[in-house]
Image (cartoon, rainbow over all chains, first blue to last red; front, side, top):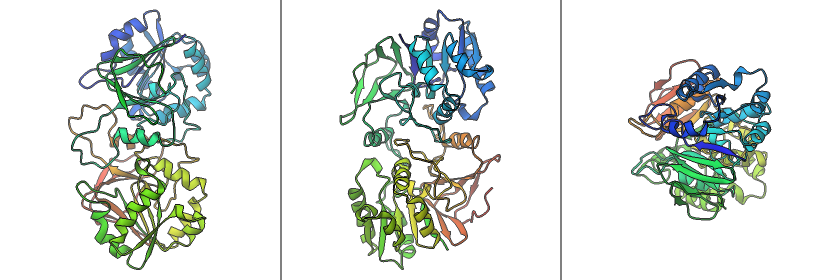
Length: 235
Length: 235
């Protein structure tokens, strides 16, 4: 039993927070009244409270109650008792570091694998892959490990970005970076463009959203997959 | 005694490898005949041999001999006996991981602090800061630590990039990322634009190159410093 939405981003250009996902989320969270929010990724360094307020406003529109994980005395108990979970974006290193610090990796994995609905955006999606080795974030803290929840059998690269034509900046393209990753690792990488998400329902992993998704498998040319396709057998 | 050039990039747009630095390097390496090259950062995953060949061609034009660190039986001995050093760019995590693996952090620091000329570009510059927490690279391997050589008393952000106007991509700007860094760390960060470098001569740390440099100090508005200025007293 699994039920996840792993989105590339919370916000698409020119639209409000989670706005493009709202119809989908109304169905996804239909049976839940309260969503436990994991605010640990702290985008722009905002506090857990500030971040939770932002999310609360968005979920209010769906008629859902939001509680921040930091509001509980025991985050572990809170995860074990959650009716639904949302992990927001921000810095993946900060997020996973905090999950390790509070020993939450294993409980979170167990709860999600038991079928509790889980929404992730950006860093919150990334941690459901095998490792965080394909994050785009700056490594501003040193976590005890890059190993992630391994709920899906591949790595995720959120905010996947195509090479920019005529770019004069000499930093590596995203594709070059993922290619470098495959010199040291063999697992597949799902390059999730903004506006796209991965839907996991029990054993079925499906791509959704407005764009194609770029898949990187070890020792293979990267390729595009249409929205609506399943990706249950990446190598 | 110290003598370093820490460049943002090896290559500026529309120009050959190290080309924009060649005049500077002719003077910098004037007293050396052989340069020991550290190829560990493996840009695009190229091999140590391939990378060393590329560098050899560039230094041939200066009449210098290049030896790759991987060509020695003992990289530690090679560093201790080097006449001059160059660490090229690529992936900072791969580079520092290899330096830790071969116990080279301390010997490299000692040799550079004894006055052996050291050139770094991109990742090769980054490792001379306090930590690699402000790299832009993808964390494709997990190093034993993010602690770096601490030869300069600040962190470096190479390839520093100004926010792109009207960008529709929702990833964080570089300034946002460095701001997030300062929620968890207090050391200054030097945002080194492409075409710029840091010159260290004994106790004097000076900015050089075609652009201004953006300085990020903890709890302070970021500010610009002109090329030619010393940055000996960042807080």
